[in-house]
Length: 339
Image (cartoon, rainbow, N blue to C red):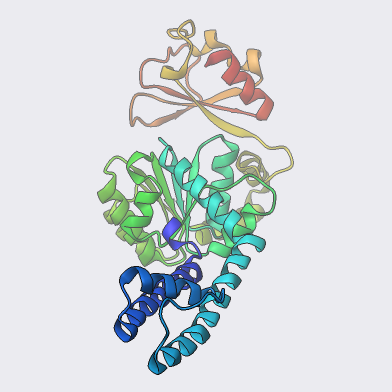
């Protein structure tokens, strides 16, 4: 968000310069009865200390005014030079241009995902979206955090620096054209407010919210969240299950990308299939033999229930989605052969 960049010192320096010129022009016109052109000329040569002569001889009051005016302008010019030096040599100017490009890029995004908050959960969500090829925009107040990541040499993170609970920040992140929003702010109340604001701005948005307290789940759902995730509860359950059923958890870790041999769950919808593949049964699609991946579930129709291990003779139709499990290479083969 450009207006929230670290520009306050630059605007202050420019404001002081404009104020100094106003005082100079006004002073020469009032004390020495100069015309506007003569007063402006005297202001410029006095502020720049070039040593040119006066347009007309100055009165005693005028000399005192000029003396203090020169001292004041020495401070103003010194501050302006220090600010410009910082922007040029400390990377502020480069950062400004980078943010202008990012702002223009975000305006062109369509069907993207907005991630509110870039803490541990937000970072993981963004990283997962990026690796899946999904465009994502981060909304974060801590500029230093994102700036350090962007200057580390890795892929640039499209970001809006601002308060995710405000309508302005969400609009700058392209909320009207987004397909989903993930809010991972530390406070449940802030996540509720984000959900309320986002739902108002985009009624068709899919909203995933983080919650710390179980009592916040119903509030987030009422505010417009489609799903609520409680990371602390999931973490505790995960650790307990490592004792009770460790092999199941290791398998789930593989799917979530935490294990040494990563697996991916991918959706293969009827609408994405090649025309030549449509109308064939799951047996005839023969995903296992062609790619090595496995069809493990089926969702029939829009909003239908998931059916685990669907019948091999079932023929997918419009609105159906197959869930396919495999490693990265196998999933890529699914994309190549069936989409």
